[in-house]
Image (cartoon, rainbow, N blue to C red; front, side):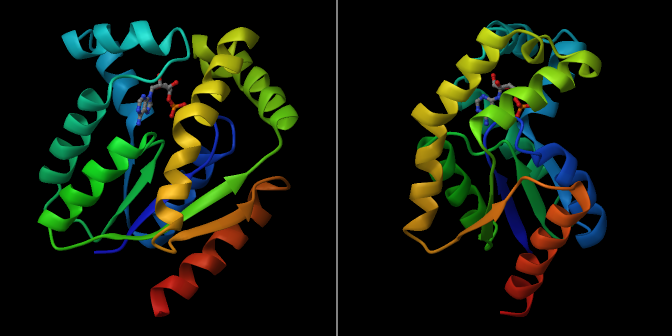
Length: 193
Ligand code: AMP
């Protein structure tokens, strides 16, 4: 299996690039944000509980997202690999992911970290809010809260994977095509390594 994490702050382009990467490399896309929004849509107990956090721009508790990832891994036993998007967002989630993958005799090949300035992130998210239907994209104070959660809890995930030499930083500003090419170059180097 070939597993990647697409890492970066909210608005860094993880969702957009994931759509293209899964198609090119035949990976299964696991976005915890998308999975949570599906739960909300279906009005499940999990979804209703998660919505309270998401509406405030706060992270959903670790147990909830780890449970979702565990069942997604279990329900795709034949996968060539997974692309994790928006997960892990805490060191506890990263630890849990490593354990889950180890149980399946696999691991993370690389963490591709998109870097984008804070000014550009806010502009992109407010812009996306005009069409995404996401309430957490329309309000600047919620966007700020999401970026603060990223800095306080999620940035440490990159440091965690850095200790294993797995982080590859990719400049996430520019055209979608150019950024996609940069990501593919890095992935292809990992695949032959
Ligand atoms: P995203 O679509 O990745 O921007 O996620 C939207 C929201 O879902 C976040 O602001 C969090 O409230 C929640 N969320 C998504 N993924 C996670 C995760 N791995 N851990 C905790 N909360 C998450």
